[in-house]
Length: 196
Image (cartoon, rainbow, N blue to C red):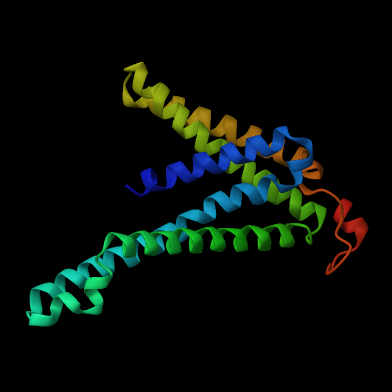
């Protein structure tokens, strides 16, 4: 169940990452753009839980309160379509703001770690993205093979391992393009450490 909720954000983050990689002047923002897309999920989940809690609370109040002036109460005002649209707009704006803050902090931090650490980080992220795609592609292929589960397991495991290894190698080799120039302000590493 959780994988189906997470899947659109993983796929969207990977697509944003790949688009940023194809445009040279956006390559240094590729990782943070993918993080921005993935950071939308916690904000949307928070607003989903708030909306669910508000709906349950409103139903509970309606069941337990039978005052004649119930229609004029504050709770009734939030039941109107305009109020729901306003709350949805506030929720979306808050989610986008949260994702933007997370991506900005991410971009700030990855520009202030040494090149060796950044190569490990870039390799890990690209390997994770490749493993996600490998598991999806392997599952689709295994579904259409109509083979015993042992064969399907070997196919999926092989694709995940091969794509994970290739993604890690690609990320560590592309590390220079994924980071851009050294920061000039608020840095705690030397320029030699930044470029490796």
